[in-house]
Amino acid sequence: MKILVITRGKLPLPNIKGGAVEYLVQQILDENEKNWHHNITICGPWESMIESYQICYKYTDFLNIKINSLYAKVMSGIRYIINRNFYYIGNYFLSKIIARFGDTFNEFDAILIENAFDFIPVIRKSYNGRIIFHGHNDWVNSENVDNLIYCDEYWAISNFLAEKARKMEAQCSIYTLYNGICLEDYTNILSEDVQLIREKYGLHKEDFIFVFTGRVVKEKGVLELIRAFILCQFQSDVKLLIVGGTFYSSDKESNYIKECKEIAKGYTNIIFTGYVSYNKIKLLYQCAYVGCALSLCHEAFGLSILEMLASGLPVITTNNGAISEVANCESAFLFDSDNINFEINVSKAMTQLFTDSTLRKKMSHAAIKQAEKFANEIYLDNFRNLLEKGGEVS
Image (cartoon, rainbow, N blue to C red; front, top):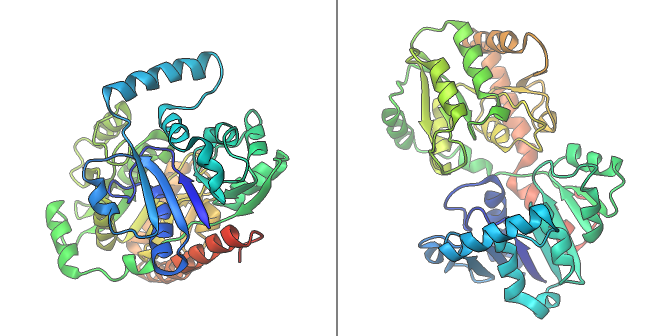
């Protein structure tokens, strides 16, 4: 098959700067190199030296679009005004894709739109074939559900998202395609590398560590996590590790991060790492005993939670969105974030997991078993089945 993959245009591929969507797309590209051999063209943003990472791909062509030049920024501004005040014509990134392919769009057997929900109607104007929208976020609502009229298939990453679209009577075929991860990435880790990451962040082997990873933003419940940790009144050798920045590779401090740091002021056992690369995060999981992800929003999936489970960490989280599809009650504490005692309940769970090693071991075993349901091999098989045959995944 000849496939065009269109990303949102925020982060490059291969995923040298992180990104959950980009990680999953790269798994597809890597598997295609080994076993499938479809002809894939992928559109993403240009990044310095990105071509040196792309050159090893035999069956994938890359269209790298420069989105940070002065011209691109001016044109993006003009398009923003038109999109906001008149009618939607797409952003600068999308306009360059359309200009590049023009009448040749219809040479592709399928176009896979990765998480760019607003791109669908614009692409349909230039392409008559099979359009697949692979949605990684909670995009669909009553005001924009008609966008799905312009695609043939909606691949949702959870039943939560799929059922939401069905209830709105979306006019396309809808399938659930769960995310997957390479389980070996979270088990085959050198102890020497773990020791180096400990030294970098001042972590001692005897420390008991709770870890949060992800964007440090309000909807991720970081402030609530810090408050719950403080309620526990742990000694200094029990630490809370906050791993991440405002947006993936950015270390720019938002007002929210400043507020979190202000609450944590004076507590030397609360550590903010800022942005940490994907490969280093896996090492930090190995330093920890418990994973924490107190999402206040309706999570479309919860990839960081899956990573924690794959690392053998019991997880303290919420039951919002699709989280309960990823973590179960054997591997995680699942709390109602709307409960008036939310932070107190979280603090009790933290204390229980700190004091009860038998419970930790039991939940750790269950975490690994739960993560196996989302092994990369299952994800890739299901992806290929949908792409080549259509129909439900296994």
